[in-house]
Image (tube, rainbow, N blue to C red):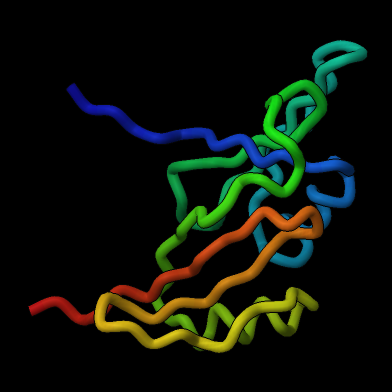
Length: 123
């Protein structure tokens, strides 16, 4: 049986600020922004090229804002990804060289953290 991760909740304090960060600065696609009822707003955003999306919103998770840590995305070029983030005003780490890849780290305005990994060459 296949099992695919398709949606990860990101706990935030200000949905509009977080949506702007992920769409305007990080480059995610704005898929849905629906107010289901007074207590629930569903905002789905997808990284370019990804089959997995994130969800922000009111009533989406009981996690405290900033507690989603270490979500990892794979990129083709860590230097280019870092440059793109920096150009958009995202505070990103320098490229961290490891035997298992090259990494760039950043956080959203609430402190949820992300890692971008450029995979090492495979034989």
